[in-house]
Length: 168
View 1 (cartoon, rainbow, N blue to C red):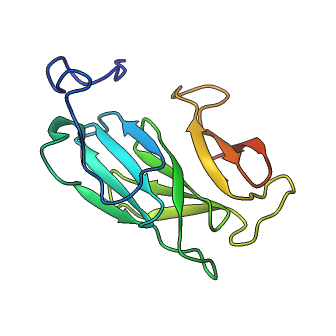
View 2: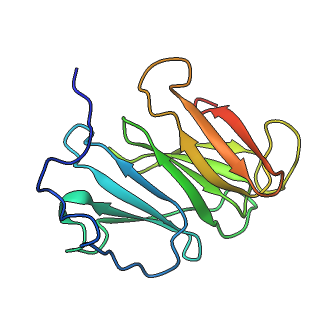
């Protein structure tokens, strides 16, 4: 069983010699490993645009985004403001939406569909299992074990970090 530790030597230029121009202020960043036939990618959250821009690591700095994922609003919510993002070893992308008090889960390997919404959009709440301006996100890097599907969500509104299972 091999694990992705980074791009092969020579795939990326030395540190400090690469820049990607973005159309708006960036908030969250995540890097995915190779998943099936999909090469490693860089995901960038742009809250002002309501999008996630996706770049191929093998062409970073040479091309525009290979995908622009528009974050749709949940039900009666407002225009999404994606901020925290994390991607797991199977290509599932988690995105916090600070404006709508939600976390969205996307399949980025096949169809780019949003398959789950966590939280109770669009009203902020302080009870356990609810969110208030979630802006930060991390996911346990291990593929197996007790924390494997866990998301750690940082909230500005409640000044706390919650641990949630991405399975709902």
